[in-house]
Each structure stands twice: as C-alpha cells, then as structure tokens.
Length: 119
Image 1: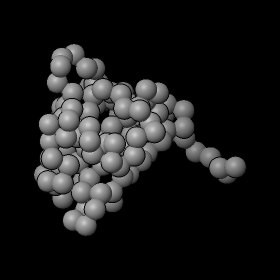
Image 2 (image 1 turned 90 degrees about the vertical axis):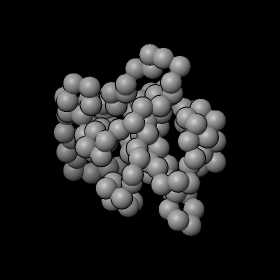
Image 3 (image 1 turned 120 degrees about the vertical axis):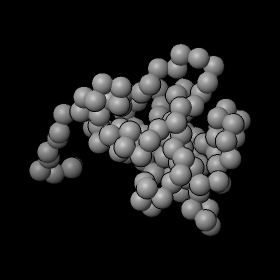
Image 4 (image 1 turned 60 degrees about the vertical axis):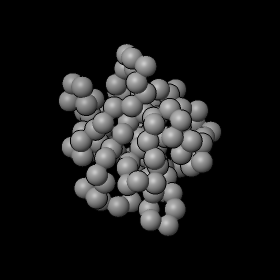
C-alpha cells in the first residue's frame, strides 16, 4: 500500500457495506452514495455489519487496489450515521488511529493481542 501521506483526501463511508462487495461494487458506492470520483486520488474506507474489518479502496495509477484489515476479537468503532450524508472526511492521523485500533471519537485503543501460532 502506498504511504497514507500520498493521499490528498480520505473519506469514510459511514453506512455498513455488504461484505461480499469487491472493487467494482465499492467503486460504485463511491460514485453513487458518496458522490466522489474513485479515480481522483482519494482513499475510501468501508466496513461491514459486524465492524470487525476495514476495507480501503484506492486508485493506483493503473487500476484499483483494495486493502483489508480484520480484527480478531474487537470491533472497529465507527462514527454513527446521524444524517443523510454517507461520508465524512478523515485526516491522515485519524485514519492511522483507526487502523491502530483507536476509537477516533474517544481515542481509546483496542486490546493488543499476541499469538504463538495462527493455526
């Protein structure tokens, strides 16, 4: 993934997204619900109903890239959808905190996990 600093705009989609949607479906949401152009250098952040994973869509000069982070035991703290607006803008720091497991509204981190094996 490119450095977060390379992105000029970061948008978080507040409504849950069907976890089966892939690049084309997410790009369609960017256009239809968020009112943005997915190929103009923005970073678009989504989560599903369970809030245990984040998917980030971005245009990489030659095509779309989709990045995923899944939490093992916690849930992402997602900003509430209080209006018809599906989108909020994030700063680079807010996105970094979100990815590090912080509730960006309260700045409270997730519990750190340490495993000896994954299977």
